[in-house]
Amino acid sequence: MDVGNTVSVILPGVVVAIAAVVVFVTDLFLKRKDALAWIAVAGLLAGASVAIGQWGEWTARYAIWRVFTGGLTFDRREAVAGFAGMIGHDRFAVYAVVLFCAIGVLAVLLSDAYLAKRQAARGEFYGLLLLIVTGMIGMAMSTDIIAFFVSFELMSLPTYVLAGYIWRDERSSEASLKYFITGAFSSAILAFGLAMLYAATGATSYAGIAAGLASMEASGVAADGFLIVTFALVVTGFGFKISAVPFHSWAPDVYEGAPTPVTAFMATAVKAAAFAGFVKLFFTAAGSGWEDWGHIMIILAVLTMVVGNVLALPQRNLKRMLAYSSIAHAGYLTLGIIAAGKSGETLGISAILFYLTAYALMNLGAFGVLIWIRSRRSYDYSLDGLAGLGRSMPWTAILMALFMISLTGIPPTVGFWGKFYLFTAVVQADLTWLAIIAVIMSAVSAYYYLRVVWYLYFREAPEGVEVEHESRSSQAGVITGVTVAALGVALVGLFPGPLLEAAQGALKLLIGG
Image (cartoon, rainbow, N blue to C red; front, side):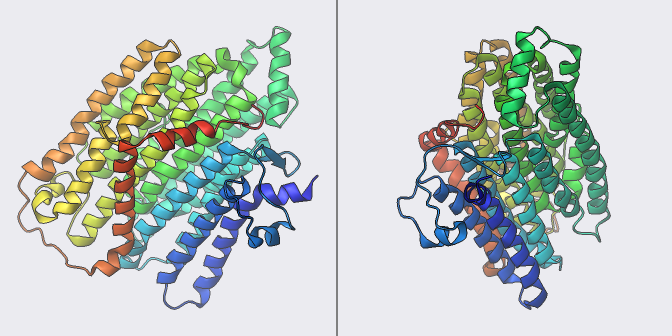
């Protein structure tokens, strides 16, 4: 095993994990807890910077990198494997690491004032969040099903704790218990599916699994029922994590009961990690098995889009509405996997990466606005509670309207381009009928998204609403996070080219592919 490559490859995750330890230790001695958020942010930015720097996008070779890696430099432009071939560093991993760390930064910014107001322990919160991001990084870098599953669990276990972090709130405790039970169930199913994949191919590495499946196909046993059951189990474990129908029942209750910053993080980062990890697994290990898993994914996507959008229509609680919306968006994202598997082209996967980034900006922004509103006035996350906000909090209302319009997919927002690229990939894969269903469901979603805008500007505020005039300094994190998300939605909507090019470039030299 090349120790140098191993250290180099796992360094982004190590940096974030070290930041988690620093947060835990510093919390024991620091009286003023405000600094903990900035330590967490610094750790996440450092992890993203290391990932980018390793790839050689920076011409300067900073001395600190050589200190950490025994003199290695990072001017390579090719994929590198380490840790006995179980972890790989490539463009896909770089994109994913930067996305996870960026979502983590926004989540920390949205959380600080929320936790301080509820007198919740911030050190443990940020430390657990950093450990979750470490697991996500491992999922995106894994090139072996053992490393993948360990990373999957490292991501999942702290998330169960964060879902019930406000333990004095019964709904938060209930959310944690529900998420733990369904998560444990999904992990068991996924583990069984991966074990069957090993039994079928005799390999744990993605490359070895791909070779084993190709050998089985050449010998005429690729369509065997054993493989179909294997892929069904893996897809089921994947479906639970992204809250795809019919594995979605936990999502509305958990999203509603969990602390709002945790809900925002789960709806974006966890979903992004699940898609990144499974995209790499499917297309480097099982890409040739389209006939075995393709039809399962089509059924999953259609059910998820339809059920998610239809059940979102009657919701009056914004967190539950966004939960069902998240289910529907999981269906849209699954279209990219279907398109890539059917056509063998990369547009579907690059569309997924683009859409995951867009969705993170839109959803984090929307949840951030809810946190901001609740910090300023009495608010129970109901639709009626938004009435008249256009007059009482005009800038906040404008931002919320922007996020809702983008989630609908109206140009020139980033949400429009995300759906456009996904649906285009589906059409190019000769699945026009599936794209038509997606467009119809997107039109259905306009009702519940634009209804929020209607309440903001065309409904009178209920009587007795009191606005709490907190200092802006206490809300600096929320304001910064929401503003960054809004700028991302607007600017990428106007200039989508650079992000799309980055998403397309992330697919070059994918290890095992």
